[in-house]
Image (cartoon, rainbow, N blue to C red; front, side, top):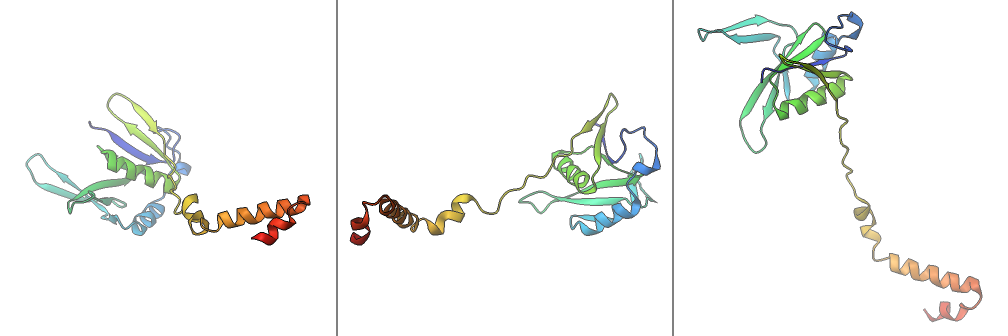
Length: 169
């Protein structure tokens, strides 16, 4: 598809102000803390004759994309250039990682193709509660009828006619 994804703080891709960039230090700190990523600081390009040419590229990182249920690892390159992080041809899992990074770094995502450029929304992470209301109430399910019975008896007693019922139970 030849799409490029940019993780950036810029308002648009043509914004070249230095105040809207991700610093190299900020990016390397993020990569070092992420157990799925490694910092390579170089880029490898396959030449038309099949040779691999490597050159220094500070901030270039690799995401070790492990497919669930498989031992296969796909390496995805995250290039750092000009205060942006660039990823080429992202699949759905890579796009999810891009959104995660953009959320953590408080940035935007732009998708650029030959025909158009668009901003992709950074999704907020979905928080799944560890406990449901049902699991919180479960230990008390056996005592709830007894408590209900006591409240009913208390209501009868307060109305004035339920003294006998309190003594019966």
